[in-house]
Length: 378
Image 1 (cartoon, rainbow, N blue to C red):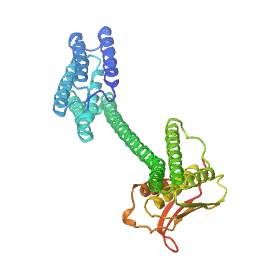
Image 2 (cartoon, helix red, strand yellow):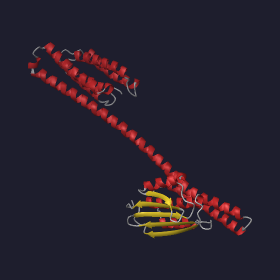
Image 3 (cartoon, one colour):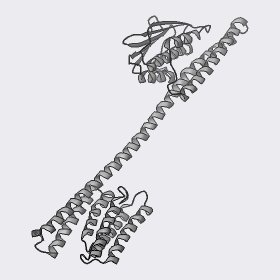
Image 4 (cartoon, rainbow, N blue to C red):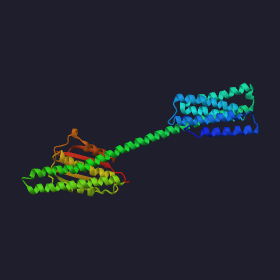
């Protein structure tokens, strides 16, 4: 981490204040100011900061930071020796301040204590009874306060930088999770929409092939139904694309969607009955869509895997929530054969706050139950 860049204005402001005080003391004749050494030392400090920023834009390595800190301390001492105003001693508060960013809190506190002790020793050498001089005691106390404030400011800057870094990492993680969730949602939509309709197309084409020689009318009707399923699949693809492009995706009516779903199963060898009770107004649209997708997946599995001849879809929308029961008279459900479709359905229902139960239906077959507690529609 750079020595001065976390709070880049501190060093230039202090250099400017020291320069102004030194020039004033020199012009007014206060003390013994050596302008060449004084101004040259400040210029060297500013150049050192600029050089470090250019050589180490991403952060100064610890070894180079130690060398630069030693050079700064030497320049601080030179400027203080050439300054007749005495204000240049304030430059030493930059020692723990800059060290905090490169070496951490412990090193900064140790250097702050060393700077305070050095000033006290220098005062004692110049005047053994310095402690009896209110002015010198006041200078030492003010210098100590400056050291404390410098360390505190460095700590705040470090914590702020750490917080920004963690926030950026959290934002990146949220974006990654959001992208993954969106990919899963799109995958579920593709499976539920295209998978359902393509299953219908395959079944109808197989039926057409089987009846081609025996019953031409039935074969032609199966082909026509397959065309209809293909057109519905194309319509679903277009709606999915429009949903991805338009925020919200428009309104959704469960009763109409289920009626259309059941109507699309006609003449494919599987009788699908719909039982719908309750009022969907006030229910969460996400829950209604999850119920529809579960019904779609239940019918698809009954046709594709269970070899069922009859499927019942019963949806109940009440004050407690939404419940869907899809039962068939097929060969039953094998838990080890649960595939991506059921996994996607479980994920969708879980996101809506509900649960999925699959087991044997009374009298044989499979019974799929989806329960989603009611939540106020946003």
